[in-house]
Length: 382
Image 1: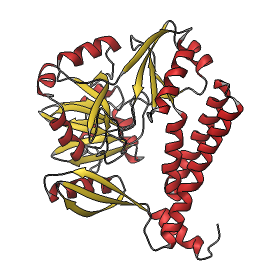
Image 2: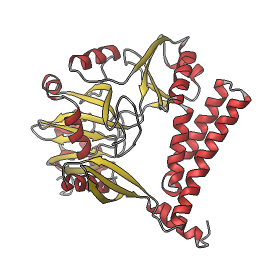
Image 3: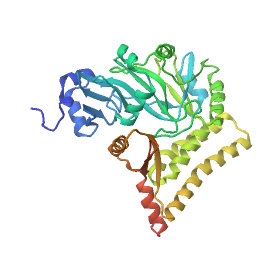
Image 4: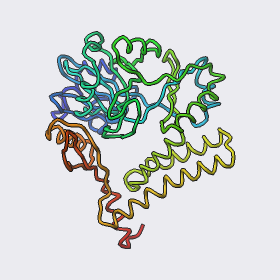
């Protein structure tokens, strides 16, 4: 007899068959918190908070007109040394697409509604609404209801990662993959770009397709140029999408991430600091920098770590709260409050500051940084 507190989707034989995971294993995963019940925006679903075998974290199983599986976006591994990694990983050609500084979104047709999922599998009401406004998706999903559009939401009115791109401005969406809902199989790179062109949907930039022997030098030149123009980096792909992609980022992007993390050191620094420093060390080594270039990198890293932390300490001592203000476009206060509820679902402390001229200022409070800086300023021990 099925335990009463287990959601029907977890124990469903159909779900077990679709995922190729026995029902008892799904039930065990639910008890362990790997799978969570998800009921928002009229959808009954289960959400994979962590990966489980071949099923990625962020996978959603939705019960609507039928049971649908929207697989999570696979984690893209990073190379620290281009020369050996590319030769080992790719056989002939390496396609290079731009990695943009925004947040990963999957857009799918679910229950006849176009819905945007964040990387973790949460439905974001703001992103869903903006995707429908910015992109003409009706024809695409009418013709391809079993496909998922995977892309990056970017721009200065991006509430998760605000970054200015001249060609985007306030808010835009750039597509890097089209995948099958159930299998997560991606379309080959050039076919994907042709299909997007048919529906007037914009992909991320294709920066070149290179023979594997020449790829490391070419990609290093591309990444250096991207960094000098305040852009993030690249994703390197097998044109046939039969191999897993790899990613590589610019020194400037890594410094910007350090600066952000050290602005709220007791909330974000542990997750950011070590990996970015390691990336910088290997990149500096492989590029064979001059002494002057290496000093510039070291200075950029050091300033990214020290200055934002000093600024935060000074603000807290001056009576301010360790927080950041997010700016989003809204048509009503209810839309702003709906987004705040979404943030709170993500365990983010947030409050509405003001709404003016169709824009809402939402304050995200970094409570751990606020509390611990206060404590140390008053003589608390570390």
